[in-house]
Structures are given as C-alpha cells and as structure tokens.
Image (tube, rainbow, N blue to C red; front, side, top):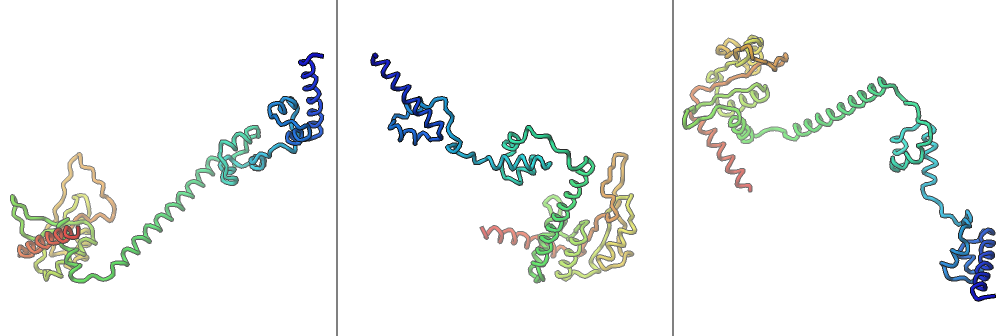
Length: 285
C-alpha cells in the first residue's frame, strides 16, 4: 500500500467515524473532542454533506414575530395595524405574509370618508380649543392697565393706524380710521386719558356704497357713546364694473373715522412720545 493510499484510507476511516457521530446527533465540537481532530478545515471536510442536528441550530429571533404577524394577517389586519401591534418594519411584514390572502376591507369608501371627516372634525375642535385657551390665558395675564401703560399703548396704536405729519404735507392733528371695534374702543379710551372731550370729536363712516350705511352709523354711534345725528356725511366707496367686493358679511360696518379738533399740541406730544418709545426700546439692546 502506497503512502497516498494509506492517507486516503485514513481519511475515509475518519470520515466514516465523523459521519456516524454526526448522525448520532453530536455537534462539531463534540466530534472534534471525540476524534481528537483540532484542524477545523479537516473537521468540516469529514462531515461535509451531513446536516447539523436540530438542537445545534441557533433559533431565529424573528421566528416568533413572523408567526405572530401571520396570525394577525389571518385575522384580517392590514400591514399598518400589524406594524403598530408588533413594532417591526412593514417590509418584513410583507415578506412574512405575502403568501396569505389579502383581507377584506373593513370599511366601504363612504365609511372611510366618514371616519376621516369625523377625525378631522375632532382634530379641528381640539386645535380650536387649544387656540382659544392660549388666547384666554394671554388675555387674563394683562389684568388692569395703568395710565402710563394705556398712554404707551395708545401712542403705538396711533402711530400704526393714524394720519401722520409729513414734511411735504403738514397734518399736525389727530385723525384716526379703523374697522376693528376693539381698536376704536382703545383709541377712544386713550383720547379720554388725554383729556379730549366729546365735543371735540367728529365722526364719519367710510363704507362701500352697497352696504347698509344707516346700520353701520348706528353701530359706531353706540360704540362711541354719541348720537348718530352728530355723524358727518358718510364717505362712500364707489363701485365700477370691475369692483369685486369681498367684505360682504353681516358684520361688515365699514371704517370709523375720528377727527379731533384743536389737536396740534396733542399730535406733537404723541409723535414725541413715539420716538421716546423707540429710543427706550433701542437702549434695551
């Protein structure tokens, strides 16, 4: 017998032993220790073609998830619901259950739209409640105004909305126009703080010609606490064929114009105070 034949016979003998041990259910480590073969390459060649025993197989961590996903799919759950239930990716769920029949839709198209609209209604109601709560808390945080605070607020309000003096057009008098009842209320309170009496105030409504002028004048007269008969003739916004009026709601009452007679000194005080506010704000930096 040649050396090569001897080596072959030796390998086959070892293989027969290794295969027999493998089929008995031994692991590679156990076969190695039994046959005293510590060369991993040789050890794998000896058992080549022989599957490892079941007990040596490492369990797949996702087996339970896969089984659960298939169970839920058979119950009629969608991919989204299974994902929420199991916390795994939708791509994995698709691989695990793609051979299963697609579940029947839980809702008709009309029912889905109704559910969606109901959800949107609840969402908007919650958002509106949050919005109103924020406004309520902010409103209550103001409390009462001191005379100084009212004066500063009135100056800022006038500078934003009132007529202003220009080098090319001298207008040193208080003339104010606005459509917001709250703004008008604050402005009138500011004038009262400055000592302006009602006999120095001239009122006039500016409004679209197609609106209810009389009703608008009654509204503003009640707000200002004066008789409507004291109002000057309304300024009407004339319409052309191209006029498109968007403010057609019942709450539309045009704008109220308030002119204060003999107010040059008050105007100068207002303008000076405004620049004082600007300088004070800058000094904070």
